[in-house]
Length: 173
Image (cartoon, rainbow, N blue to C red):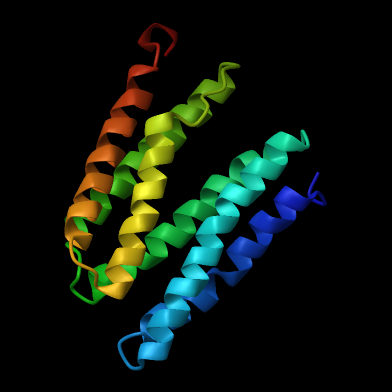
């Protein structure tokens, strides 16, 4: 059901990601764009928690939400990371490792769904997403220790990927 509030919030988040990208790309030209990038990112990241909360509280979980909510997260996070790679703030290999983990986890979830199993988001996966979003805010504002927060998010990314990988029952393949 697309017309419930959590799904509408998810769709709005995806629709407004290009605005965030514009602000982030313009942030090097004018300081006001840096502030707009942070504010728009904060709002878009915040709606991730709001739509999930509403879906659980009002029992409005849907297959659409299960698919598009994590997709919206990844579009938001990786749009920022790719811009940071392009501007030389991040090394591409780190973003490639994160993307590889996400593709692995998506594959595991698809395989599990075909065998009738549901693999829910792990706590380490949720912490990974939060730490990635925090790192992005620190990176936009060029705050001290942004690189440490990014490194923590990379390690959480790899660890949570390992946790998902361990859930595979290779006897069923």
